[in-house]
Length: 624
Image (cartoon, rainbow, N blue to C red; front, side, top):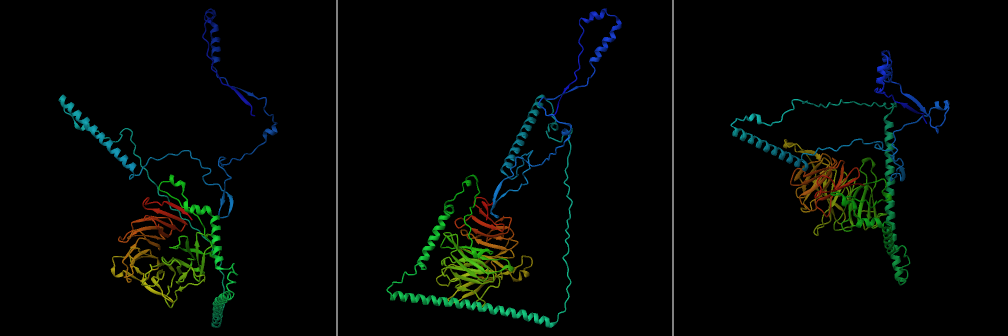
């Protein structure tokens, strides 16, 4: 412990007044007076403080060498009140990890003030303006009353009142007034350049003759021919095996039936394990086991309500329930989803790829909510699947559009991995990817048909005849010039790439088409040569258009320019526009509400809007 220093502060002593000494001084000789004055002056002299070191009894006694020893201490900026061992579960790496220090851990607020500025169009601003106006009127009335009273008093006294002296205009403070000005300087522009090292260059020289070029070309051509022959042989072998297997199955079934009839039905239940009845029972048991294992999720699917909604006015939430996956669908992109109109638990998912250089085979998986562990049906395609649609009256028919321009129709009841109808070059085919297919309502007088749109600029109608799928062109999407001053240049050469379309539920002949150029065209089946109307609101490709199921004039559109727009087809400009901050891939109206719709963006979020509650912000945003 350090030695305590006891200091004595100087005190200026005051000379005492002489009482009895006065008599003595009177008798003393006159020569003694100066000595008394000198003693009085010595008391007024300033004295240095006396330092006295007090050593406690319990102080540790250290030697000189120990006193000279130095100890280093490191000061850090870490806040001891901030926890540094928070551990959270990382779903990507599937393990618990310690949270790294955040940027605000060492931040401390010393002063925080709330502003008093309000928006001039808000209700508070209007109330403030009304209060200021009322106060100004009251002041004016008081000033007028004072002037009137002064005039009356002056008239009563017979004096003349100068009105110029009665003006109560407030001017500048002439005694303590300073005029201030502020100037914001323009920040200087900074240039930044990066220089990279040039790639290494290697000089290579060789002499090539016509014979070398010819031999190399012929070798590659012969190799290609050999590969084509091997592929044809493999396809023929596969078809032959399938045909032989079907013939063997038919023959075995015939022999079994004959044997059962011959034996009086004794062998009817011999192969019970592989019978159709056993397969149906096992499927039901699998669904029961799956629903028992995920009972909490099914309960949330039916009855879940977020308790926090009562404290969030005008906001909602979405709850993710299931994650569907298939082993054969790995490394493929989900390109389309379609619910079955008759079976509310069944939906189809299309797998493919949007990238031109990474094209491979496609896949169609039909899932059901009753068994979320495995798809009910799986169909493989040669090209990637881009779009799907179930028939509204025939729930087993599924129309599929592929990346190579092929459209196919599957019957999900068939267990054979082969479509019942497929487009060919002979009957008609798209030359570019098919982005959407849409069934039409079944008519007793007509055959089953559906429409498709492709990047080759054509909208086609496909009719399912007895033996083949026939293609009927409905419209060619011509490019339209946006310049209105030159009517002679209204049409450009070439076709516009179609991305999406939708038919009006109230007028069957009316439909709208979205293109890659950002235009939306209103078309009709009766007028295939021209557009009824063109809407220019988007600046990039239109990914989806949807008619409102309850309003015959309104429709929605979404685009890669980050916006969702609400249109009235009788008006050329959009009614409302919503900026979601990312490319919007798809939109859909709610089936039971005319004001609710949802949109998905490229950052993996679902935005749900309700125009009856909030026309500017979504009710909820959910990361998928």
